[in-house]
Image (cartoon, rainbow, N blue to C red; front, side, top):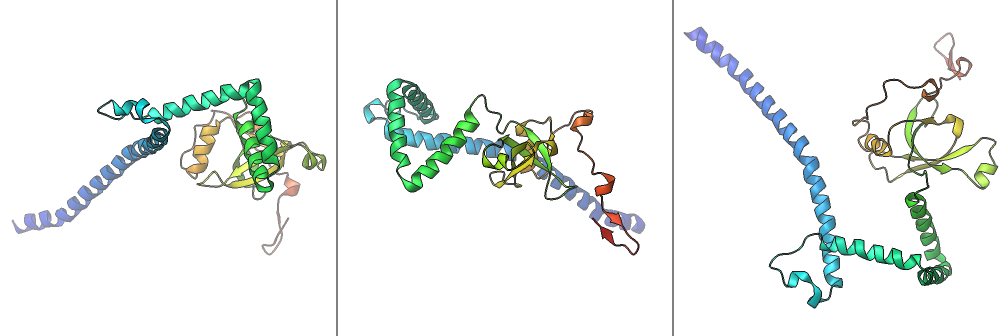
Length: 248
C-alpha cells in the first residue's frame, strides 16, 4: 500500500507538468488563431472610424442621415471619401481641371521646400499607380552585403540618366528593405546580370521580409538553370594556405 501511494505521489508532479504543457500549447494556439483576425479588424475599424469622424464634419447637419436614424452608419465616411476622390479625378481629367492643376503646380514650384516634397511624392505615386509600370512588381535576389550572402529586394525600374551613363553595365534600381520594417531600406544600382529573378509575388516577398524569414512562400518544384544563383568561380573563392591562413 505504501509503495502504491509513493508511486502515485511521484507521478503527480509529472502529470501536473504535462497538464500545464498542454494548457500552454492551447493558449498559444488560441493566440495564433485570434490575434491576426483581431488585429486586422481593429485596424480596419480604426480606419473606418477615422473617415466617419472626418466626414461628419463635412456633411451639413440637415443632410446627415444619422440625424434621422436611431443608429450610426459605420463606413459612411469611407464611402464619401471614395466618392470625393472619384469626383476630383473626374474634374482633373477635364480641360478646366488640368488648367487648375497646372496653375497650382506652378505656384508650388516657386516654394523652395514645398516644391521638393511635392515633386518627389508626385513622382512616387505616379510610378507606383501607373498601370504600365513594372515598379514594385518583381522580387529578386541580390548578393548583399557581400559575395555569398543573398538578400531579398524589389526592382523599382531600370536605371536612367547620369548614373547609367557612368556604368558600362545595364543597371537596375533595386530597393532593399529592412526587417521587420520594409518602409526603410537602401536604394541600390545593381547590374542586371547580377540579379536573380524570383517567381514569388510582391506580397509573398513582403511577407518574407516582414516575418524575418518565418513565413516562407512555397517555391516551385524545380528551378530553371538560368534562375539558380550563379556560383562563384573557383578562382575567385578564398584559398586556404598552410597554417590556416585564408587569402581572397
